[in-house]
Image (cartoon, rainbow, N blue to C red; front, side, top):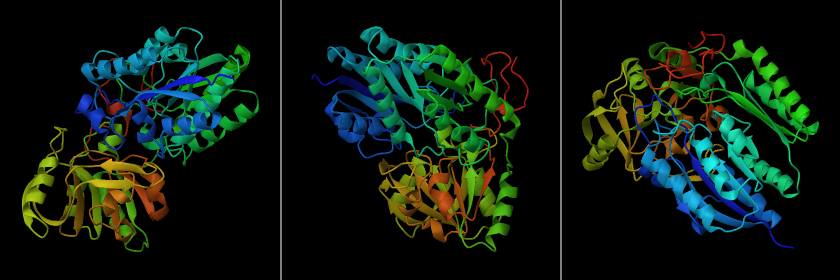
Length: 499
């Protein structure tokens, strides 16, 4: 029996159209916190044993004995738009790889689902449509998506199935790839499903999309029972609420043997999330108030109080260099406190020139032009230096090899700062340890992250607070200057409607 020939590839970017910096080709070549761009046979080894969709898919496909045809896989840290040049280069190489593969039995793509390019609002829809044009109507195309995907009708039409993560923090990325492989196996066996697609009429702040908290905990727990009751696949995507185009927002995609079954499942889930709309909320502190609360709580705590610096989350398009939370820590004379990662290549280079033990006067961070933010001018002690290479072994990054470039631990008073040269979301304890900070020994940790940090930091945290210092990703989407959302879309749960 001939082995099924399956083309595999991936192109991952989460686009904050309000962000300060765009993603050119170099961002994908370097990968940020992800593996570097890889093509051909190197793709398989570069993405092996990492918590990513393509890793899980390849593991499952190899177990099935499928013949894999690797094209190109790449990812970049979230930012503003993908440049037209980068999009066309990468998409073109994926398409060329598929064309060169000859006859195929299927295609798998590891995508994010919230990519906006300079010239194309719907990056994944455009890529999937181009793949469909190459392989024709009968070759199945299956894609795994991030839970934060902004799904479009074009994406649904072009793919046989879109299968999304079910956890945030995303600890199930590889598992989602395995589910995508199982669905592709269903298609290879000749089974075709009807599709149902629904868009939710309100934006959800990412800080309250965590699947370990209500209402997402219950909503996501409801998905497996649908599939146990005859639905082939159902995904709830809470969306990425910082993309200024018509299809930004949460959605539901269901696949079933009949259109009636697919529609019934999608409508039931839409009703469930609509009834919980106003539950997507939580307490947010201003920087000084949050630090004061953390200091008070830490006085009787046995573990660190962890603060999410949510509005400068590099996982949501921030440059990870704002200084609002650092100012609050220093102003309050916080003891045994650490913050990271502040990305400032110039400051890192100056620390390396000065050497361990030196005192350096810097304008640290604050270079993104964010309103209400500025460099933090002070004298810092260089406590340690690093080349920025580490293995992020926690449950989110899942063993990814990170390269943050020249890095340092700087200290002012009893506040320690992880300074790096390349941005990556603070979602792993090793991102403190690689510059000599032991996170479990701190009274306060400030992480530039919204939710992903919870996977590795909740087990060591006394409690977690959310703070809103100036940054490009407002905790409330209603604060963003949208101009192109679809009319009637509520800008936050229970909030005002666009247009």
